[in-house]
Image 1 (cartoon, rainbow, N blue to C red):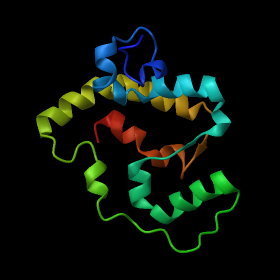
Image 2: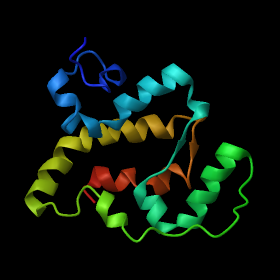
Image 3: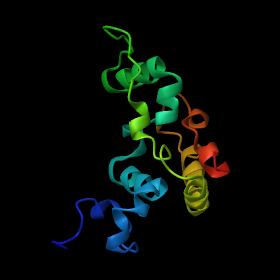
Image 4: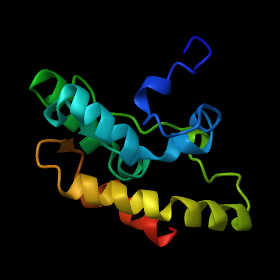
Amino acid sequence: RPDAPATAHAWPRSLPADTIEGVAAGVYHAQLEYWFKRFGPKRFLLTSTDAYEEDTQRVVKDVSHFLTGSAELASPARHPSNIDSIKVFGGMSSDARTKLGRFYQPHNSKLLHLLTHQTQVTFSPSVKQLGVQGWIAGG
């Protein structure tokens, strides 16, 4: 459709177009299932801001190795000073965080199931360290 958002092709047809740009953007399992089918899971490296914040050096080396075949870096990776600017829950009220967590819980459970059963995807540092379990628990 000419009026569909640019990302509409990445979503199951059953999702209404007006939800794609908003809340549905956090339904990662649906997006990943689509892209894994389209390009094959071995072409993906997945990480998270949690993993990046906890071990910036490791994640940058993993990305370098995935893209170039070498984990050698010309200089140490720097932890960004503005990482809080990309965190979703940063300025959110406790009530909103709780409601959003409840909404996403079943979707994040599907995401964790997808990732733990996906043997061809590269993770940095690991599926467990992505932090999805914390999202399910409301953390």
